[in-house]
Length: 131
Image 1 (cartoon, rainbow, N blue to C red):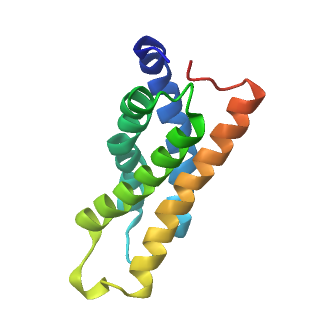
Image 2: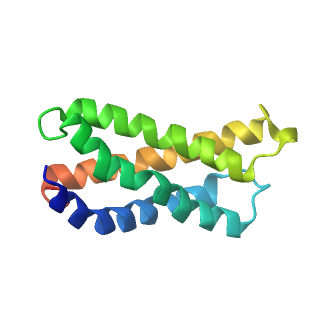
């Protein structure tokens, strides 16, 4: 994977990811979050993690040769960091360890999983390629 092809893929993959993840966040996040927070989260969370997943990790891990390792690291990194960012932005002490917090974390994780699975399906079919 060369850096040029990774940069070329960045915008396409980002738009694809937020198109998949944002509707899941809109529907799944706990009711305490207004629609504007849900929409913001759909764009912002991916904007924070996607460049690292697409530009940094493939070069650190050699995603071409060690694809399974890259995917395991990337798909663990993204939801963990996004849950932490979401909590930092929208968490309140009263919700710590309550059902709404776990629901929000599960939703962020599910959104990441959905874009990963659909991306992998498109990648396998040749429709979506990062290199």
